[in-house]
Image (cartoon, rainbow, N blue to C red; front, side):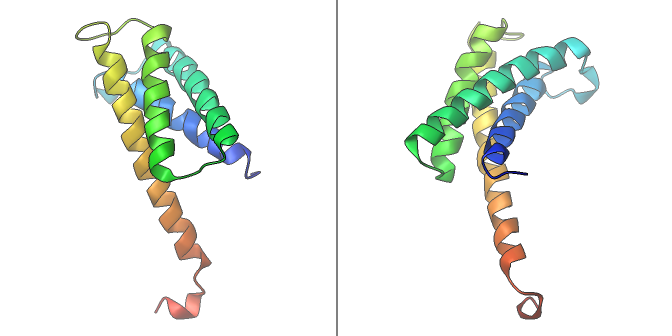
Length: 125
């Protein structure tokens, strides 16, 4: 996969998953096609917008990526659909926090995995 496409796909998938899990309030058995469509809209808009801003800012610092993705996901989630719990903004805030945490953890894990792959096999023993 091209290096320029991978961060976009990562941001879209993290925002989508955060929205999907928040919408069903953690009940993974409650997923429906409707949930998937709404979460996909939120994820695509938030992921592409975040990627565009990060590309323009020329940054890939993990905490900045996570913070920005969380902020943008929360705002997009608020406008894409009404909240399913709490006030109108509660679900959007929770979704944004979830996207930020997921982004930071996934990015850190990928960074660790890439660094581990770069080490020759003989030095791992």
